[in-house]
Length: 123
Image (cartoon, rainbow, N blue to C red; front, side, top):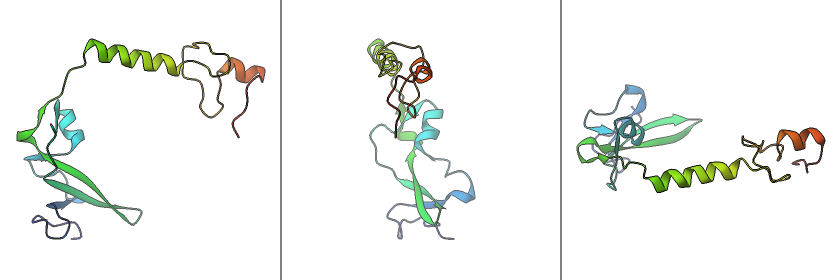
């Protein structure tokens, strides 16, 4: 098998094929850790899953679950920053109004500006 390298001799890290199913029980990808309410915690990956996509080799890092740390909770300051960033994305670049939704990036303006034709259409 192409990605069967549990010793790490070929790829530098122990590697398992994605097609065989889940990773070893003691290891998880970042998404799998996140689903469990954990994070890698600054540790380096100790293994990887490999697969082919479009003829190109792809890899997903695996981290030991026992060394993972709990996810950090969102603080009030982080929530405020997220709200501010979301509000900034709702501003139409042409009329400079908060339109209550994110204007189309393809058109580059809100629906009102697009309908009135007073926008500079993206090329």
